[in-house]
Image (tube, rainbow, N blue to C red; front, side, top):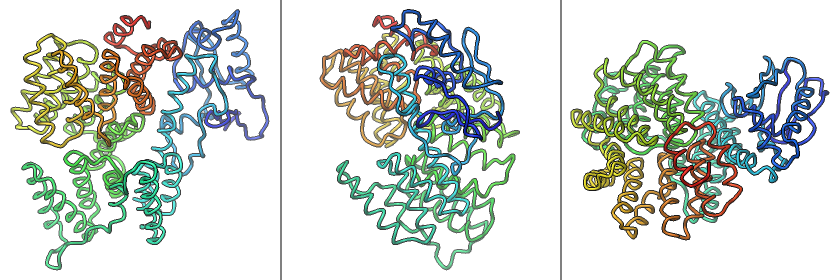
Length: 599
């Protein structure tokens, strides 16, 4: 039975080398198999029976029959049993979902064209299962697109532009309105020397965006078309000393807030580093430019991703500070872009490359705490953040302590531990003051302002939130602007100023967010406000929240979206809530659902 594959993407099948063997009979058997395989977790038989056979006279009997079907189809070696029910597959028997979601290492070129999860099967008679399936279809499709995109970047960095173009083209087919996918395809065509085709393709991309979205050529596509800067000047020697001079100058500019000037220095440093043929220096320069784009200029697209993949192509295998930082940055942007499964893989690689480097490990654990809290794995998040804080204390990294304390406070705020959140966020603000890190202050202040609101301290909340909003606007950082907008909506509601909230909702929902989780959180707040005020926008907000949260694997926000839809009259969404909330451990969320009589 070696090399048996379970195919759940597209029309489902159990594939064997000889092409023979039994297939499970009936869509419910496939539904059961997909649920157990995709979740990687056991489930109580009574819950499965009520989910899959809500109208059967004997739901448990129907479940037993389908289990027998699966055992016969899976063959010897597969262990399917117990209560809670679990499935254990033997070695050599994989599933395409594991490859597509990144939980199993796979090369993008080996990734078969993927269809929809359980394509062709419908479960309208099982509303709870149907809601779970819809959510997973969105999430897995996003994972597949991301793997193709990242594979294209890796191929481009390793000098295989034809492979890169093929992978990017597949990503574009799956999501023709993702500007980053188009940008990588154009970069690949240019790298292959096909400038005519690249320009023709860019023109067609611009026409598509104009016709369907009413906008011109996306910025990422425009940047991809531009030739790399070669403004080195004949008088500039391409030496390590010269490169480091520009890197140092860029660092000083960033500290002074002169971002554009810093980016000029960094772009020039990368060009000079290329001419030195010093792999370490090239990797360091590329990493520095990518970091500046990400953290100072909102770079969440193909340009920053390409720089990081190119930096990794120059780093050695094994322990490497530059590699660890590049992997961490890829994890950071993956999390903020809404692909937490990929973020987890990048952070695993970052941790392996950072052994013996406590300062870098502190940063890695901090990002891990951020991304695991995004997907409502709060216990895991707090464990990672504790490790980050301990290492930051040992190394004396005040800014890392500020970041980690803010992320800890965010978790505590979300689970309703308001006093603890206040302590953590005050620690963050104190560290920010000590480090003179004004740029990060608006995020910590926005969260602290929400904590004041939750504790009924309206005056303190107003001062903190309004100050955060000004700083966020001056910074131009969309993460901070969205966080402050969310706090402002809540502040206006608390003050009884319902007319002031829509403006802040609109600000928090501007196009091109940097951090998907914050956008989803603004949508959640907007849904609650619209429901309370009988606004006709409520259904639209709830639909967008469902789409964003399910695509990005934001489990708690998926549940909140279903809760809002249920209040608005969607009975199927309401029936799905107990299933979707089953694995979440958030007392605040559960209390909210109980108050709405949805649990």
